[in-house]
Each structure stands twice: as structure tokens, then as C-alpha cells.
Image (cartoon, rainbow, N blue to C red; front, side, top):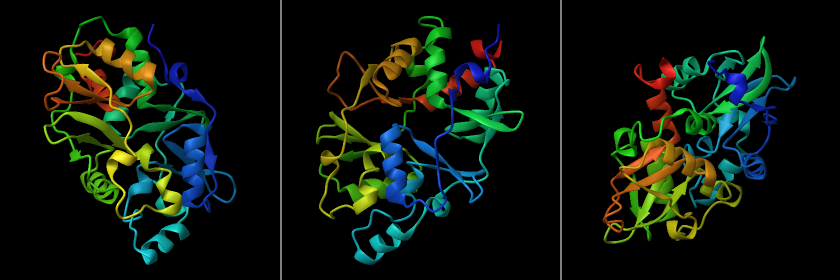
Length: 269
């Protein structure tokens, strides 16, 4: 029996007011351990969505006093994305996977006859995928992203943030001089810096989190299980026979959903 969106969604909607400062948005994202908040209008109706990645748009990380002061005056309504992408709770999951790919979004507001009842994200699909996919049906190497945004450990946080914003990547891989993986910097790592800005000399090694690696020949089931267990959105792909060599790629929740949306995927049959 085909599962529906309501079977995977998270009930309830975490919201913020339109006049919430970026610092307040960052605090709520951190407190609830989520990647986005839905922004209401002054009458309490959902009018937009603001994510950790939205907080990085523009030059908000600038250490210039004038730019920093401007950033502190911005509110959720200034950076939110609208209109909000919605999906009905009774939508079959294969159809939902297609919509994720078509709209290139990280989450949908789930509605029941037009009333907001929850949210569904790429991570929710990964959790379900670990139960549905046949062991070793496909490997990490089949769906990973070969291109990687990389920087050295001594790279400034300002430079890394600007590179992420200009390239549209949600994370940057930190490596040493020989290409060995040191860690990862994601939008979530930079949330706390929104409140007070960042010192010009702060480097990525001060804010990065440990990277999780997976062998290129591992199954998608193994990748999904590793993401779920550790609450990670991406894994660094390596060759287990030479784990200290430069990484081969990255596999993320979005790569897995793209696999699910393929016409020949088990989700589409």
C-alpha cells in the first residue's frame, strides 16, 4: 500500500512573527533543532518561510560595523521566501518526491483541506527510504554529487560563507593541505554567528563540525541509516581502501530524494 505524506510528516508547525530579528530566528532554529521556520503575517496566517540558508544571503557576515548594524535591523519578513510551497496530507509519497525535485525545495508545509497540519522535509524521506529500499539495490557512487565545495582549515568564516551563498551550496568541506577531510561547515554551524557577527580573523576550523564518511560502494540503505542515526544531512564519500585521500564526492538527503524521483525507482512503481 502506497504511503501518504501524512504518514511521514512532522505534526505541528513551528512559526515566528514577521518582525522577528535574524538573531531571534537563529535562536528559534537552534532551540528546535530545525532548518526553517514558517513566518506568519500580522493576523497569524502563514505568509513565508525562512531557513538557515536564508540567513546567509547577502553580506550579513560582514565584520564592517555599518553592514553589521544593517543586518541587525533586518527581520524574518525581509529574508523569508514566499509563497510557501504546500502539499496536501493525502498526497502519495511518490508524487511528493516528484514535487520535491520539480520545485527544488527542502520542505513543504502540509495542509489538510487547506489548513496547516505539519511539515515534511527531505530528511523525512530519507528516514522512510531506509525502510523501503532493497539492500544493495543501488550504491552511494550511483547517486552522489561528484562536485564538492572545498576550503582549507585556515580559510576565514567570512570567505566560506560568501562562497556558500554565491554557489548555492549548503555546506563546505574542510580539508588539510593533502586533501584529508577535517570537517564540514554547514548553514546550521553559522546560525549562532548571525546574532553578533563574526570576527574578521575567525577561521572555519573554529566553527566546523566532524564529517561522517561512507564508502563509495556502500548501499543507499547504509547511507540513509547513517544519516538518520547521526541526524546528518550529508555524508562525505571516500574510498575505504584509501580513506585519507581526497574525498570522491558528497551524498546528501537531496541526492537520495532525486534517486527516489527517478521513473525507474521502486518508489515510482
